[in-house]
Length: 229
Image (cartoon, rainbow, N blue to C red; front, side, top):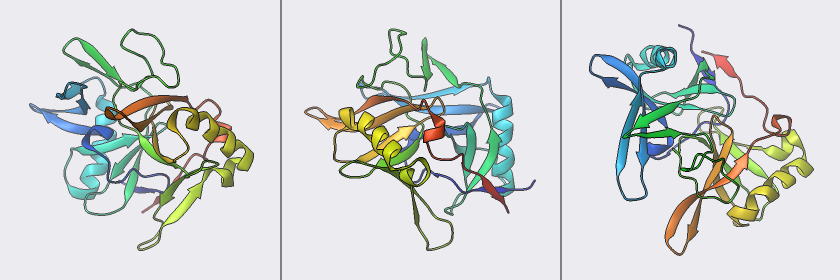
């Protein structure tokens, strides 16, 4: 197959519960999720409902390393991106818009911003959903959002929201987040539902909160593309 090197925002050095994975279950391949509960348990949930997504990811994995299983991500444009083991490269497997939901011990785990009571979350609410997502950074002091790419070996490039959406739109977006996140800057995450969530520190330690949704994609970063390799 023709590999397409992904040139957008690539998650790097994220926790196990911040990514999806293709896993082996018996003789089949399934989509897996790690979910850390508030009482210290770690759930290893799987779903067999997405064979096309399994195929997409596995084809890239096999082309890269010969292995069919491994981690992947879905960004806010529903692009499926697959890391190449042992390198800094990520590859585009295609686009997938079917929602991922995992049933585990009678509960449904999903990146949709819905609370345990079935109601939509409001900004500032605790984020209790799964944490797979693509990280962005609020500039310290506010005013802009950015991510970093590595276009060539030993080269790092910062991509700012103000460069594509304009300084006014970037500042307005950041003001929405800093109401709940604070002005110290730092990471937040966007998932395939376009839900925004971020870690914050309080008296009881770190927790995640919901920051709202991306509503106007015309005032967001341009849809990333790939380059054939």
